[in-house]
Image 1: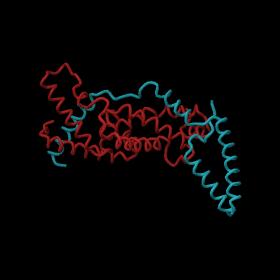
Image 2 (image 1 turned 90 degrees about the vertical axis):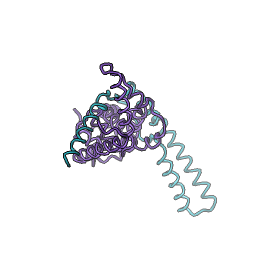
Image 3 (image 1 turned 30 degrees about the vertical axis):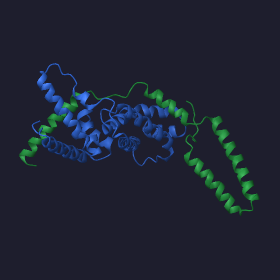
Image 4 (image 1 turned 120 degrees about the horizontal axis):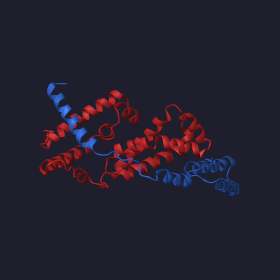
Length: 186
Length: 102
């Protein structure tokens, strides 16, 4: 299999097939990173970010000097793009509201339990949205996407211990926020 | 970390696993590659397009230099003005790079 470096060289010489291979290798991970920053109600925006990342990468391949790995470079662009987009869509309602998602049917549980679950999940979703962007991304990558700490660290471009620390601090903050809402008994 | 903090941390860990972990992770919508390829094509100029752009730039530079020269401006200023204009255009026009089809 051709290395990323070789594909980058070929792409910057104008070889579309090489760039298509780079897209194939990284598109899903870039998308997951974008969704982890934006949240689950903004999947179309995450696709938009993913496209923009590859357009920028294609345009800037010649400026890529190989000091970092190609993936790391892409993830950095993706994180910045997603955070910038999030600042613009912050006050826009998501395509699928967290309320609707919290009401996801789970028919094997009694109705009162399901209502409790929905209320707690909605509160949790609101609390997560109040966390700093990088904590939100770490939480969603780890708990929602099932990424390991090592993979989350690679996507976020930070050391593994920092991811662990972010996750720990995020859980502590979430617990305090839920406690304030009278929902500490999780 | 105290025992109480550790209990809270474990409880939050469990809640996050139950809630976030129970939702299917989204996948990239189908047709992504096609949409991306279309946008890449739009941004990249064809060979003919680049030739036309270069020809236009040459004519524009020649006309600008002629007009500015006849206005009795010193040549260093004329050359500087033309180069700065060209650099500004190069910075904002996407798709300067040639596209080689496989």
